[in-house]
Amino acid sequence: MLSNQTAKTNRFVDAKNGVGREGTAATELAIMLPVLLTFLLGCVDYGRVTYWAISVSNANATGCFYGATHRLSSLNSDAWEEKIQLLIAEELSENHGFEPDNLSSEIETELDANEILLVTVRTSYAFRTIVNWPGLPHEVALSESVTFRQFR
Image (tube, rainbow, N blue to C red; front, side, top):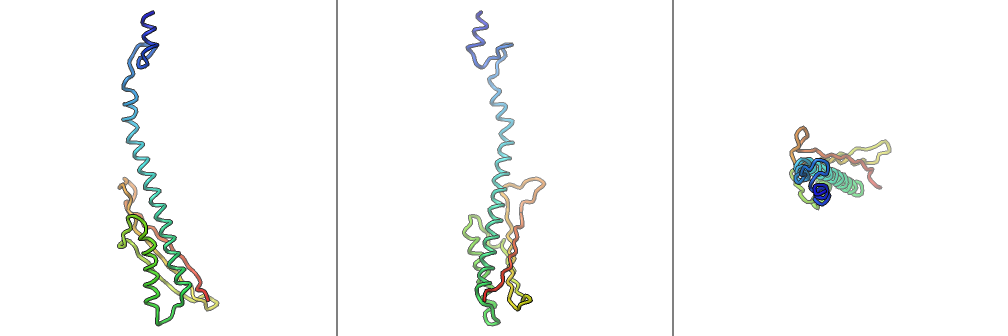
């Protein structure tokens, strides 16, 4: 009767064979913690890449919208392109960790069939992940291209 009562009152002793299980939870945690942390860091990196991809897209659209709403002529073409690139860089500079050296923008113009100017802006940003994952690139090239018709 005494051994049965001891098995019921001691929660760390297995009732069938009386074997202690004190270290089971610590062992399971030690095995699963690296897996859980790797999964957590992977989720954070994926979220950061997605966030930056959206930011690059928005910045590119902002620059292209400026190009579509402001007239381009042979007199102001350099200032016009500089302003578009400045707007893109300003939009991205609001993000934490922005590195201007990783940003590049290309601006192209052409006339469509109705003799309306089409403004195309291509922006790319070299994004670096937190962790250098084996088998995956540490630097991800995020690029976006937008074309707007110039407003009359």
